[in-house]
Image 1 (tube, rainbow, N blue to C red):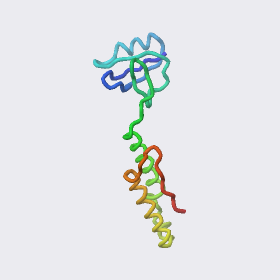
Image 2: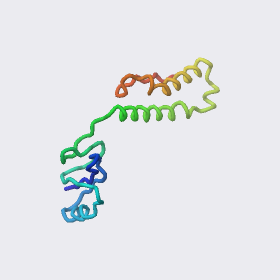
Image 3: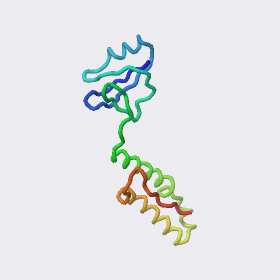
Image 4: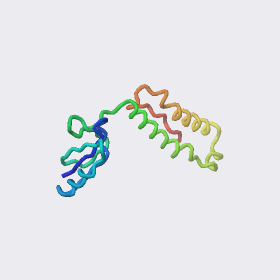
Length: 127
């Protein structure tokens, strides 16, 4: 058994508590003013919202998709571009360097150049 504490104004889950009925009774007694709860067999509240007294998967917004796109883009920049070893850079010819510059710029431009943030066209990483 579990209890989800949530903000009734937004439906945003705040905390998930699992345990015995007695332990969950104590959790409900310690709820802050303005919080509500629902009971059930819940395992996670990640990516969920409370609607009509039930925990449901939250609808993704374009802002969510853009945030996810930027997060992945930033990981690629850190992993492959911004962490470029200066010694390796010096061993490249100008064509290779230009390919990496263009790749980095394409990643930086991606949020503005994509038409569908759920299915962006990722630039090809130079070899």
